[in-house]
Length: 475
Image 1: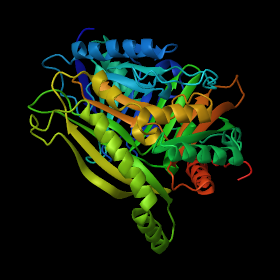
Image 2: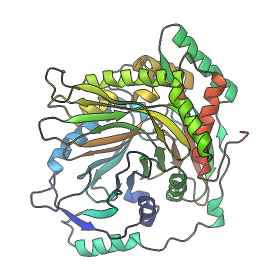
Image 3: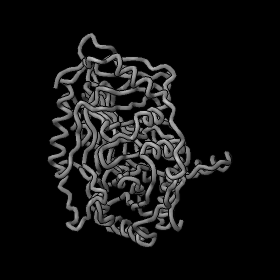
Image 4: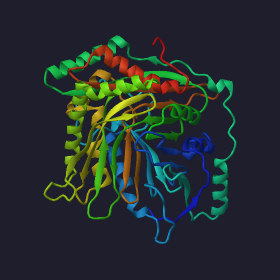
C-alpha cells in the first residue's frame, strides 16, 4: 500500500457531525463511518470518513477474520502521509475506520460455546469498515472543522468544492411517513430474563464466576433512513463515543458512552494505552435535588462499587499482558488513574474508572486490541468463563452489540469504543420499513436482584428509544 499526500482544507462554520453525515445522503456505496464525540466526558474530536480507498468486510471464521484484520493493520504503516504533506489535525491520520463484532471473541480463547448457539439474526459481518484517507475532522473544543482529502485526484479542487458545499445544503424535514415508528418488543420475556439472572447468581454461588453481563434483545421497525434515525437518537443521547457505520444492506447506530481502549501513536520514549470501564447506572432527574440524590446513592452503592472494582481488576490484568514491567517502566506500569468517578449523561449517570498502562515496545495494534477485546465490563469476571456462561444463557450470537467501533491509523494510534446502547439496522425492501434490533444488558453479581436488574435494562433501552419517538411494547 502506497503512502499518500493529503490535502487539508478548513471548513468555516461547519455543521455538527450528524448534520454533515446527513448531507452525504443515505448512500451505502459511500460507506460512511462516523466517530462522534457528541457530548459528555471526554469530548474533543469527531471523524467522518467516506469513500474508502479499500473496503474491509469480513465474515465467516473468527480466526480467519482476525488474521485478515492483522494484515490490514500491518499495512497501515506503508500508508503514512508523504513528507511535505499538509499537517493533519486531530487524532486520526488516515487508516482503518470500522466496527468489530463481539462474535470475533478473544483470539486463542478456545471458548466452549454451546453447539446450539443460534446465529446473529441479521447475519451481520464480523468486521465492517475500510481504509480511509478522505474524511472530515472536528475539534469541538476549538470549534473548528477540516476536510482531509487525497490530493492525487486530478479534479481535486472541484471535489473539495462539491464536498464543502454539500455540508451546507438545505435538508428538508422528514415526511410524515418517515416519522412513523413502531414500538419495540422483547424477544426474551421478563420472567425468562429474571430466570437468567438467577442462573448467573447460581454460577457465582458455585464459584464459577464473580459476575457476568447478561443481555436480551428488543426488535422493532423504523421508517425512513438510518441517518435520520441516528440524528434523532444522538440528539436525545449525546455521548462521547457515539458513532455510525453504513454498508450495503445494513447500518450500525451507536450512542455508547464507554471506551474500550485508546493508544498513543508510535514514537517517543514511552507509549500508553487507556481504558475507561463503566459499571453502575442510575437514572437522571429533572429535579436537581433528586438528581443529586440519585447520583450520591450510586456512589454509595456497595454492590455497584464492588462490581466496578472487579472489572477494574480484570482490566488491570488484561493491560498487564501488554504492559512493561514496573522495573522497566517510566510511567508506573499498570495504574488506576481514577476510581468510581460519577459521570453524568443526558438520561443516566454512571460510575467510571480510568486505567492505563505503559506498553512494551514492539507491540502491534492487534496485540493491544486483542488483549482487551471484548471489554471486561460487558463480559464479566473471570472473562473467558463468564463469556461461556452468558453465551449459554443468551442462546444466540450478539453481533455488533458489545463489540467495538473505532480506528487504527498510520502511526499506530488507536481508539475503540464498546458498542453498548447501539441499534442494528437491516434495510427493508423498497418502501418497506427497516428491521431494527437493540440489545440491552447489565452486570450481574451475587447481590443482584433479578427484578431490579431487568428493570434497569428497560430503562437503558427506553432512554435510547425515546429519541426515536418509540417505546417498549407492554412496558
